[in-house]
Length: 345
Image (cartoon, rainbow, N blue to C red; front, top):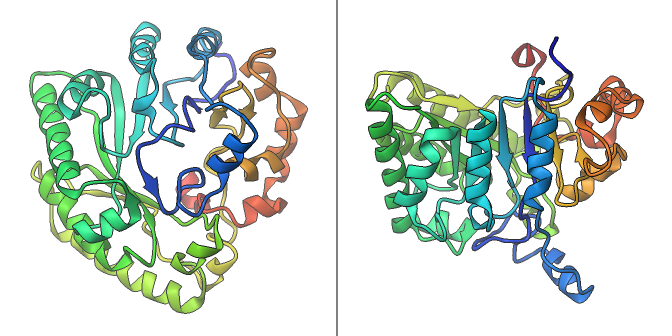
């Protein structure tokens, strides 16, 4: 009998390490004071002990766990023990699901691709524009030409590996929907189709700072109306322009919004994470979802994987109560990740 637990776990391996300063990032944006406060308090950069990951994976044997995600805050490929994570995936026969800014630090795109492609289910490359100016103005520190070449290298190595009978990982362009890039969303999709990207995925802005609130496509009904117009155009492009392999590109979270989405992204929508996925921070603390760190703390204290097991947390009264009552929690009402009930089935 299978033990209870999540099918996917995200480990916050190195949230304080990144070589970009994306304007919407809660930690590295020029508008963020997270780094400044940490340094002022004399707190070192957070870094997860690789042994915690091993411990959790050992305990997860016999559960539904299929894949893990290294940090989605910061750049995971800067984690010093990342190669050990790859080996753990091989040892425990689970897939790696990676979100990267596409700079491929330390090794370069080709070397990383050869290590990653055989064991990944999905490589999500952050991509926030269809032009050099837009991309570089949103993802500060990025280089359009270098990023494009890195992406082409990743796709080439993925395709070569699959052609030889190996694993074919999905490649995704992932963006934050912003006033600054919404007019280029159609061209981002066209670019993805031309290159052979499998999926375009995004989410609406978590407006951490007052300086970026006006970038949200949910800020008022006029912005929502313009967003909806772009969505129809994007869907038409995806429908009528197949990928080089003949398949249609997947669009995820690029959906028509209700006018009420100013306050509630999907009225009556459901959480795609509770009872499905888990997050573990650098110190081992369990979190139920991917909401910004300070926000998700308001959901409760569920325990620490250093002194309890995932099964104990997963079956606890505290976690069960959240699953039952989350739709009345203020964070969940305004969540950018909710899905319509039909999509969650």
